[in-house]
Each structure stands twice: as structure tokens, then as C-alpha cells.
Length: 99
Picture 1 (tube, rainbow, N blue to C red):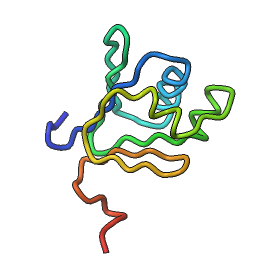
Picture 2: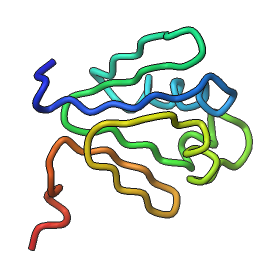
Picture 3: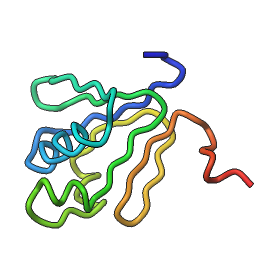
Picture 4: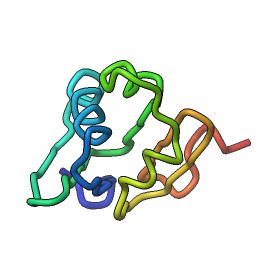
């Protein structure tokens, strides 16, 4: 993994986090998950994307961005939080924000 392109997040262990890991196993090839006792460290090159509808499907109930963020202890990269979607980019200004 190239350190300059790496993004990451730490999520406390919970039902929501387990559903997130299940979601990532299907949607994020190349994701690296490290078990750190009471939390998981999740890393990937370039971008991590967390779609609340997709995670909710694995959880079996609705999950919103606020509850997802309660489980987050830290992240690195540029985070963009919107309704139903959390993305972490390695770029300072992701392509979608450039004019």
C-alpha cells in the first residue's frame, strides 16, 4: 500500500461495525482490516466509501450517518459526510469537487 494514497478509519466494535465489515467485504476490493481488540482499523488505497443503505442491508435495520459516526474513533484522509454516504479520499480535492 502506498502511504501517500492510503486512507483509513477506526471503528469501535459494534453491530454496526460488523455490518460495515460485511458490506466492505463485498464492495471494497483491496480493503485491509486489522483487529485491534476493541476496534477495527480499516485501510485502503485512494478511497473508502460507506453507503448507509448498503450497510443497513447487512445490519437488518436502518443506519444513518450520525450513528455510523458515533462508532468512528478516528480517520485519515479527506472525509466527506453527506446524507446516507460517508467517503474518505486520499486526494486533497476529490475529482467530483473540481470545476
